[in-house]
Structure formats: C-alpha cells, structure tokens
Length: 194
Image (tube, rainbow, N blue to C red):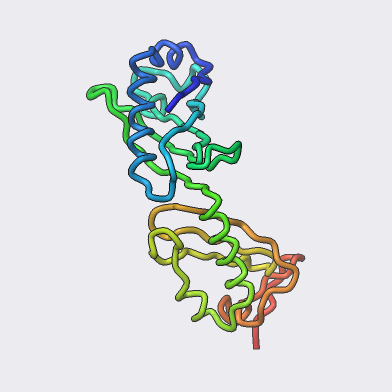
C-alpha cells in the first residue's frame, strides 16, 4: 500500500512524517486484506484532511485528527482496471493508531450487484418486495429513501456502508406513492393520496 500525502496545513504536514504514513499505509493494507470484496491489498492512494484551514488546528480541536484515504486497489489480473476504496479515519495521537470511522467499497462486482439491485427496486411490484432486498456483500438490510417529489430515490447498505447510490426516475412505481402516503409536487404543494 503506497500513500501520497495531500495535506495543506503545516500541522498536518508535520504530523505526516514517514513513520506516520507507514503506519497509516499498514492500517489500510490490513483493512483491505480483511475485506473479501477485494482481490488484493495492493493499492495506491492519497491521504488528505477535510479540515484544511489553520482555524481547525487549535489545541482542543478533535477534527484536526480526521483524515480521508482514497485508494485504487489492484485487481488479481493486474490489468489497468482498478477497484476503489475510501476510508474516513481518526488518528489517535496518544496511541499512534488509526480508527476507521466509515468506508466505501467499490469493486466491479459490487457495482454490478448494486446495478442489479437498482433494477430490482425499479421493477418491484410492491414496497414489501423492496424491503426483502439485501446488501450483496454482507446480506444486511438495505436502507432506502424515496424523494417525496417522486423524482429520485437513494439506497445503501443499511449496516456497513458497503455502497450508496442515488437514482433519478422519470416515472415512479404506483406503490411508491402508497408507501409515502403523500406526494410533494414540484411546486411544493402536498397532493394527498386517495
């Protein structure tokens, strides 16, 4: 696992010494190896902080130790095709360790499975059918939210965040309206269902 720092504050640049980067790369490498979704743990990525202003670097700041790793993971066949891994982490300065707060897994297989889930949701005959769908990797329930205006929905792995997708729709299914109980028109007025 190779990491390139993209850190803008002096505090972060001082923190990201070679030993710190090696420790973070080791943490990410172990995490990748533990995920059966990935074919290898060979990856290259960047580390950055969403808090890149000096005003967040005070002595009592907690967010100054929040980091993001965005990595491309080599596939077994070693082609130019890569999978993606993102992790939101917190560095624990007292112990010199990292704790993954959340992660996003994007493999070709997972993206294909999520596309299949999307098609199932769009073709579902009822909300009960959608409620039975599960995450293709961990089999936990999926979390789904429908836009009250009827023009989109979002769905994700309900437990581990393995995927997230937002989908625009031109014609929502009839059961969608029944599940919501009210339709919010684009002009903002509520259109109660009969």
